[in-house]
Image 1 (cartoon, rainbow, N blue to C red):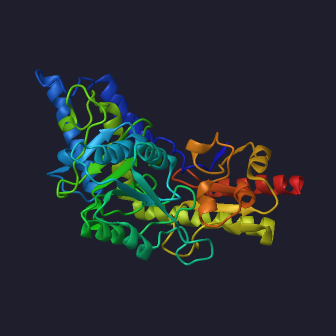
Image 2: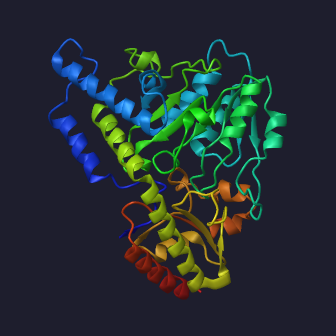
Image 3: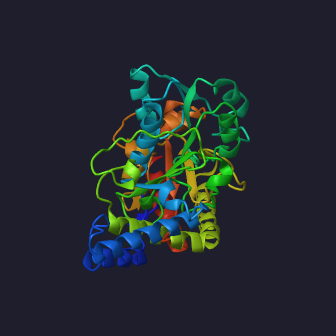
Length: 391
């Protein structure tokens, strides 16, 4: 098996597994049990782990325990941010602004808000061929976002085409009218440098399994400096984490997420260079195999507007699902893992102007820490044989 689906999940780093095992075998006390030394020691370890993550995210380590809420992953973080802001008892605004190419973990909660009487505005993105393909039009965003806007939620980078959104500029627009900005940074955190406070984000979601940590653990950054954020808790019972997310915290997973993020932070420059080289090797190989019958979806590969490990291509005339069945030794995808059971073509690719048929002929590749150059060559050989067979 050659794994090229690192956008959907990543292999857990062996050092992360070791750190988690220690928390399950030795330091297994409940961090909330502060009446005995074992519980206090675990609580101290969690506090230290959160400070480590804050340092990696360029958040003030002194306020980190108040600004980072541990969740079960980015989907829960998104739900907590969206419903927590919009359904707060003191919330009077009734408009939510987002982007048509968002992940379902944002779009589906917004649909529920729409059914409850909120006005949901989904901004379009620049189309394929535009220099800013996949990004929102800031002028249009500025016209839409107003004093009636309860929340703006925009993904930091796309899980399908790797395009970045202008979060810093959007935050300035939001703050002029007192609207909080939430960003789903699931694909960015752990892989690309990120300055949360400089970006001006009021809330930001992330998930450990996207950066070589365990599944089932993630976080939501909530700015302590923002006067626009009033968060209504969605899970009650126990009052943990300042009553913003009750429940016994998953200590082993938190330690694992912290260790995974620390390792990513320390190796980020080298990893990005390696990912970019492998991604470009794969793209050049596909061009050699398919020539003009393979087309790049999303931003150019030689710019700074795309995730370094992302490649999304259209194989003209070949349905992506059929090609993947022919390449059963390769792990790749036709889009988000959360919509893999959905027969409809990618809404992200259609948002940048691809037809439904073109979207169905597209495949997403994601390289990562454990991908090798030899595996890229092997993958290209498998794809070449499959394309010849299908054509």
